[in-house]
Structure formats: C-alpha cells, structure tokens
Image (cartoon, rainbow, N blue to C red):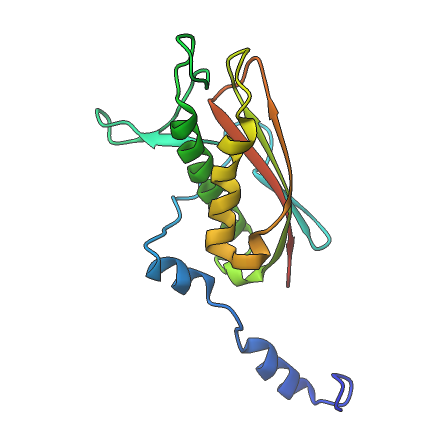
Length: 181
C-alpha cells in the first residue's frame, strides 16, 4: 500500500482537491440557505481559531420583521404559561435559525467552504425561559437538528442546554467546530 510519503507532491495536491462532500450543493438541493454573515458589533470577534478548533460565540435566534423587512433578534421569555412571550415551538425554530447563523459564521471563517468542517464538537444552548419552563432540551434540538441536517454525521455533537433568568434574546446558541485546512 502506498503512503503519502511515497506519492509525489503533485499527486497529493490533486488528491486533496477531490472533494468528498459538497455541503453547499446538498444544502441547495434541500432548499436550505445561509443568512448573510453578520460581523461583530462590539470589541470581540465572532469566532476564534486555536489549532484545528474554531470557537464560535453565541448567536441568537432572529426572525424577519414584516414591517421593516429586516432580520431582528427575537426577545422574550420562552414557556407555555401566561408569562411567556415565545412558545416553545417558536423558540425551537429560533434555535434552528441560530444554527444557520452559526454556520454562516463558520463559512465566513473557512473561506466559504463548509466541507472544511470536520466535526461539530460541542453546542451550548441557552434558553430565556419562564421560571417554570423545563423544555430547554427540546428548544435547543432545533439547533442540533439543523446542524445534522446540513452536515450529516459531521454535525453530531456533545451538547449542554440550560435556562437563564435573563438573556438578550429568547434563545442563544454557541459551538466549537474542528476544521480542516
């Protein structure tokens, strides 16, 4: 069996150029598109690379404001009772949208090629729930499901879900991804 040390540099480059996955093409076939990348607005960056790991900061669920035509952060408490502003089902959709925003950031940081995502390692989802809300995991499934829908097995990850008494949005999600050069 040949090893990469025996193969010529030209052959290795040609072999490396053969893409095994076509993430963006598969997304288009499924009718999934990434939102436009949004740069950081304060004194931080959206993601930080350390070796082969890309640490992506929290991204919130957004929805289209029909009055302005702009995507806006959805704020409020998630729950089933009278104190809730956002239903659990709507929050799950927002988590799914937050995952697409995370993938948009990943795409930006890897030169537009999501095939460079080797594996999503960890996802952290935080839900701004009412005091009696217990469905945090179901809400964050929206993000997990979207990552697997887009990346297949590369999107499967370890996960932490928690609730918060106060957040700038109904749902926020962050993740760590292993990337390939």
